[in-house]
Length: 290
Length: 313
Picture 1 (cartoon, helix red, strand yellow):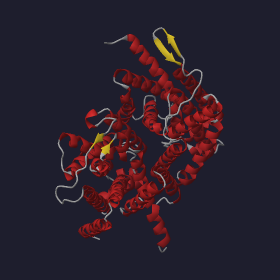
Picture 2 (picture 1 turned 90 degrees about the vertical axis):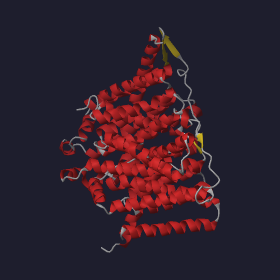
Picture 3 (picture 1 turned 120 degrees about the vertical axis):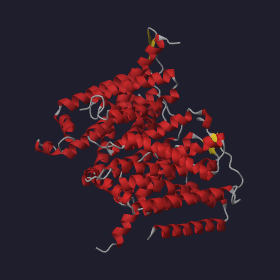
Picture 4 (picture 1 turned 45 degrees about the vertical axis):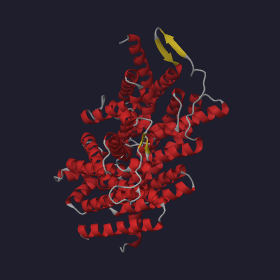
């Protein structure tokens, strides 16, 4: 019993989901892909973003995405502080792998438990005019709660890509992982460049968090489900390549949407891990890696 | 100290601990003690891979749950005695460790770490979808009143089993540390490229470490369903296992067998106390904060602090 409208709906849902996944992953693409900092705490910051959107929505009736844009400077500052601690404690001494990972794991855990202590373990959701609406185009359903985050995410990605390829600071960020000395000779301070880049990567979590809570209700430990996804997309796309990452995000979105449609949603978390393992085993450079 | 002497000494200490717990005569001592001993096994197991070779495993919960769910599976199929279940749990977890290690250990350490983190989520998905072992509802495993051999109350028997497992784990770690294998592991930790260039079979050594570490974690998980009585995916795959098994060696010190042991005893006991006196969420927050603080301030843990204070330079 195979129907084309089911298939078409699954593809649409997958593309919309993929656009959102790109917003979730772009921070890791910058921190892990470009700066080589294994920030496994990134999903926890996304959940933090969700809760900030929830808090201001419930308290002052602010739109979740608007809230996340207002919160960008705060997340940027948080990212700068974390990078400074990370740099002074680990990167400076050169032996950052084991302890750096444990450091971010601890931060992930502290963020999650703090959110539980403050907000409890109940699911939280937000209200906005577009969340309840669904457009019907032919027999394809386009829920606005998926479309709005997807479009906003593409907008953010385009802005970041322009920033990374067209501005001096952006190009310096792309260069910092390749040759720090050469960058210094160009008159840029590598530590400052890395701090800016890491702060930007955390700032994206504010937006991604708002998208997440628009799409679905959120509870503090939900971030863990995104760890596998985020790194699967990042590796599959080729580390440090934003267009590759977007392609991989769309691909994972479609595959997960198919799994959910044809096998059941409870299997979806396993998909990303399968993809991650296969990529690591057969093509560690990713789809668009060098 | 030679290994046989160390084993005898360890057995004496274990016997004293068991006798002491029986002297107190309160069941709570055995329930709390079991948890602390379980963390001794998990922390020591984690350290064999993480501390000795420098490869971070975030999937302690996955290996632990593999052992626990093997037990649930056999409990439904044909109940086996616990020592046999421990062997089964070790075999299952060891094999999964081997498979995953083979796919990811050839790459940079970060990839292995990420893969282990994702492994826990996928195995949880599998268990949630597997109705035979209870699915998302969980499974009841009724604890018998007393064990068939020594006729001890069952919780005392479980405590004794975990005590033996802790002894096995510590002896294994110490033996590795003083063997050729341990020196091989250390070369990987210090400079893998140089080790590979000097002819150290790094992939083989990393796989051995992953299998031993995973098997010990599976062993720790095997008696768990009988301890808890009702096993559900969320409790078997809880992130606190991963956090604790990393925090304990980091706080104790990662380069010796003594570090995870002291870390597990201190942090494990502290957690028992805070869970009872404050709340379990606050207790987890303390673990997280201690982990971050120790990683930044005392990179070599308590053992490192001790050496810094008392070494004569």
